[in-house]
Image (cartoon, rainbow, N blue to C red; front, side, top):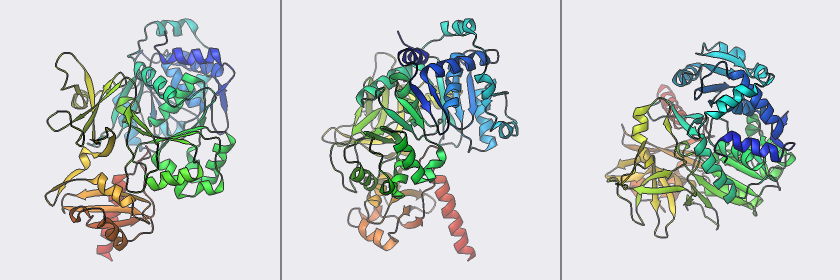
Length: 510
């Protein structure tokens, strides 16, 4: 019975020992080599860590990083990838939260990490990879591991400004990934081109789809997402067949007209998540890659990547909304209204999720865990934890689920309850608007729209009057050359607001 991640890794290595498991720009590792390197790292970590503690990793994503992750798991621990772009204070805060006895880095980043004065011992990955394997010690650790032991901790931004560490266990991934790979037909013949940073849960689908099926994972250098020709060359040269990417990464391809340069013809599936896919960009992809399967994935980190999927089965026009689809197997979707009653078709409610893929909670934060991971109010007979996503979703008369907005982005404006996501969808349909995002200025009682593209305020306003009531038309427009992104590939609202404030100050001073 394969109930631990290591069981699946070793089974694939036994079946396909010499097949490439992971590759990056300059190196590659077979499944057999990955197991050996991971066991070496695990053996070296054992004197430093206790079971079920968490090891922080501070380095770029690479083949060696993957071996480090699995090494931590062999040592009976969880792993947590730290983002190199984060300030030192945030890195220290995360490591203090984890109470991590060690943090692993490589020689390229050792000096920067030591300068941060982080808690815990600093270990160098290159040294760990060359360690002798202690079979007896690894066996003792393995014998006491359970499928509910933490596997990784991913930190997401919190509404309070304090990062939340989402704890995902072995059972979560062992439950979700086989469903994911079976539905989309991922096999050992596939090549997954990894876009997402390793601290973003989109990468979990790349890493573990490869481990479970024997597919090869090609790790794309982060810098290629500012170099469209290099990105297309990489996808073509490495024979990529499956992309599981953030929406913003796919929009980079279409905005930069990268497909005019080269089309990766081996692609058979493109899956996207993280934000609402603009229909214009989806249609541009379909123009160049008409035979590819396109999949809209939905779900937060707290439910192990995704809880619903929609395979795009018809043409969509700008202004239409892609459904978020149907639940993955062994996941139950509830739409609850403000009174915790199920909404009827045609209604909108908060999407809540039940099932084995629901995370263990937030690391060291029982208060926020209790607020988000709660008893199913519809179940009066036994314990059933659901995760409250905070996302508002509409159940259509046809039974489809359509994402509307965050609960946080629902506003009361001019006496009307408005979803900012609805305005953004309308904006994205306006000719000349590439991307759009709305913010409500509570102190002014005004809707601020950020737009990217050549359309000016007059043209946008005229077009919106054709689709939206007057009270939903933004009061302020700000045109930007590009949308700033968070580390997780989502539009950075804070950066946009800072840009807006700076422009306001400049106008006053001018």
